[in-house]
Length: 78
Image (tube, rainbow, N blue to C red):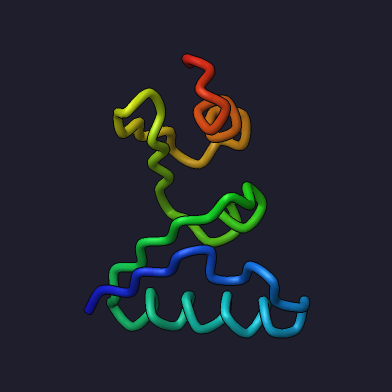
């Protein structure tokens, strides 16, 4: 199973966002691959095992270091 989530909590209140996060975690725990696109760095880091950023037209695997992800999101080379 594959779950694709694009900005999954944009515009939601805290309670609804928490419920969405829980559902994504449950899907992952159930064996699904979860691919998420989001602009919120805190949300990305809270839910991700691996982070890939599109920078300069290329995919950059940056791990889950806050600094590395933030720099890649801004297009700053590591």
